[in-house]
Length: 69
Image (cartoon, rainbow, N blue to C red; front, side, top):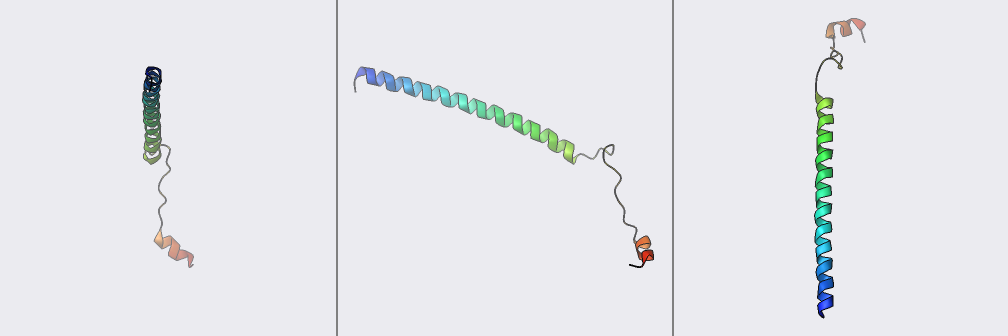
């Protein structure tokens, strides 16, 4: 290999390294934002505030028996 070819390979290796680091950083940022967004929505979905949720439905066995079904 000539000196020019080795410089080209070195330049390509440098660009591959830089692009892989940039892609890795982008993936980490997207994953972090997604996890934060989903965890906030899951907390809201499973929280029992009582304000937005109605009262629990209770089954009255005596009234059911009175229906004679």
